[in-house]
Length: 160
Image (cartoon, rainbow, N blue to C red; front, side, top):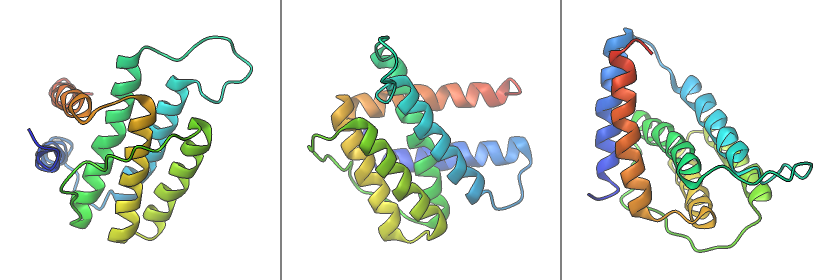
């Protein structure tokens, strides 16, 4: 499966959720806030900023699931605005995670407040760097996305 196919999977899930939850309004801002929250949850699982603690990061699979939670909302926001990305932004750039999380938060907020295609693509670049620094491959991301996508359908069917 290619990365670009995830946009279609996300569009189908969003349509299912909108029908299931009877959503008939613009939820762009809610999705934007959800993306920022998911980024924070990802940072929390890496524990990169917890200088006061000796406990290490969560297991890789937990961190990967949090990462793809963000990807769900990022795909959804792109679909809503008609923006697509043909390929995963594989950027091999070593960064301090704490600094990079803060900078990623900044680019997300820039996109939410000014939802241009350039700002959208910039968010993807930052997620590409995060993936590299967290040791995630495109295959890891696609497989985890598919698994979480199905889990999200199941949650909707069970009244999540």
